[in-house]
Length: 218
Image: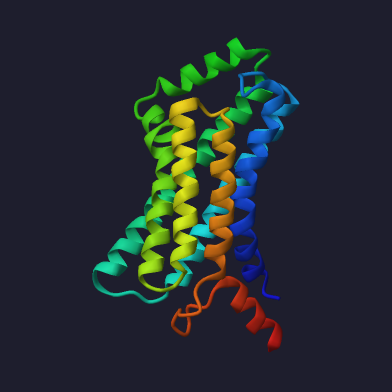
């Protein structure tokens, strides 16, 4: 089995699973700024998850295959936005890990974050719009691929449902809401379906699982 294909297939599971796993690891400290093993474990899992999301985004671009005209510009721009946001989240999680490992309490952690956010553009790019852009880009990319018949419409709808439930849960009830976990679980199911692609996909744009089957038959 091609290691690249194996990594790509795993990313469709690992990214969303890590989101939910990190959320669960934060429950013992109620999602608060509390340095220690729970904070470190949760943020390490989230860091691995966003690295997996980067791999998944590249895999989705590969599934799009050759696209011309406006479709190409839309796919390329959406993928670029997703990767930019993945990078922003990776930076944020590295900072979070540093704060958790070096601070003695929540107040010291907050001081680290305040110092980092004092630099121009950091809060906007790393902690707010830039970090959240990934979810909008994933939603857009799912529907672009569905329009190109590279993935099923069902997979795009389930992914979008997960993103929307996650957003509603976060902004209405806060990140500790159970609705956030429901959104993550739906998003996980959606990306699993995205990774399977569509039986109508043109030759050369086989889903990840299909590519592995082809590789094993050679």
